[in-house]
Length: 120
Image (cartoon, rainbow, N blue to C red):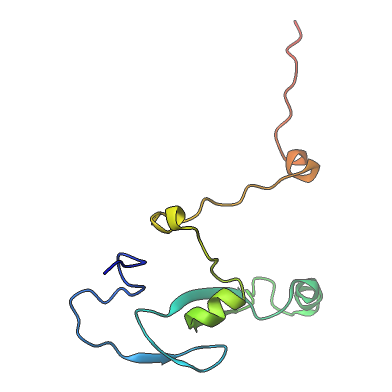
């Protein structure tokens, strides 16, 4: 029988059974190896309020703590919320991570080093 993916959408390999986890979005039971996992690290305070808090703080070298969140999605929620995308048959074979996004537009070139003509 033909199969859509070489790993059948799981990373279980030799294990017979894996523990289920709950989807962060809909609370569906999904196998831990099949769940789409994302680890998010962000500041507790939004960026607009960081300057105000730093100005009002008594401590000069105080670093604001961060929030560490592990999100686990079922396949349906991950596709619906664009965490992962549907790929064509040829692109499903590619296992390497996507290339990092390059900034585009004139704002990206503003930070680039300027070439200075040599004068003698």
